[in-house]
Length: 524
Image (cartoon, rainbow, N blue to C red; front, side):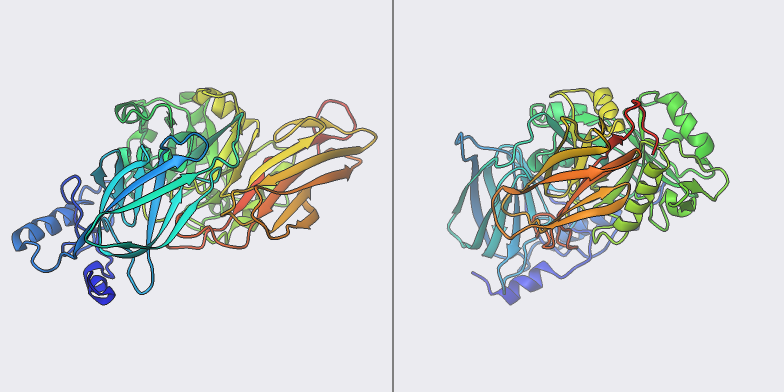
């Protein structure tokens, strides 16, 4: 086995794009230049990859290749014993470096799996991967509904090594559909991830629905899902991220490709004020949900660029419009440290207090395969199993959903839940909530907001029980209002979710709307 320092020399560090080798071949062959940052009309994103490959082929591997080992893996459902889709994350056990199957977002193909950076995404749960000899901590995961297995100090030498693990479906979400409404891949000018890789990734992560939102282009994952035989694991919906220079970015789904619509030409949009843009979207996609993506981003956020006043729920910039359906409260790519979360919550609460029924979402905005990974966060939507994109959009528009990067929420207020209207009895409502989490996910406090104000907070004792915390709520109000439930964890989710940031567990539910006077309407 080579020394850790020798492997460090071979692995990097490097900011290079990397070497795209033939399918099934792993290599660290002198990846020496990063691709030019792509623009809306850029076509040279992979030019540096091709140049690096050509140079490596001419030079030959020489002594740059580390000694290899073979790891065979089998991951099963603890209840049934059947193999399941899974993500394997390899982290170097100090002083050994973290392996890199590729140094870019174009993965290598394995049998029933793909590998990129330090991860393997498997559809089948069984297979083999060629990996430099060393010692690794291996995270075996399948999303927040499942337990995790962490193998510490797994030694890979010349002889093949076996990794076997069983995961338990500890927090099933029957009656709910998980979806990520903000997903980029190679059709976007700022992503190189192939569509096939996204399907492997989402299926391994346990996300039920992938919604394509490439910049000003409509991408269809359905043929790729079918080709890979992943239809029982993953469904898809066509969408777009309408990307403007002056007003921000807006997600919209479901919709159909329309060659006559100038919005879908794949170029940056200049002008296109929301006062005209939103009606334009609705005329071309009458059933689409319009989502304000990363609204407080200084460069790309509608609320920042349009100068939204959260107290009045009005925009100061001429040409703005409030004709949207949802707000992306949490974005795993643009704000992994949650620096804008409180400001965006304040905006959303202001919109709700003004009488607007605006849904909340949390999405990954995934562009890569190394960080901002699929489904962190994701949305759980209360919709019938197998429901199509129109039904999913309608349930989201109604707010029958919560978003999460880990904790799973349940809320019952008089038999009603997220997005529902509940009638107060003598100015009072009572309810009950439960927060569940897989043992590897931290939850340390729960908050209840009423009318946008913090009403109560509970400290969650440390523990690894799936049913992490539950409590009763009682709210007295003389006027119509809204209730929002939130759960947080302090400890980061770990390397299986992100290597670049410390994304932590957060879950926020859509409002329960309270009709205080019993007139059947909601007017806060």
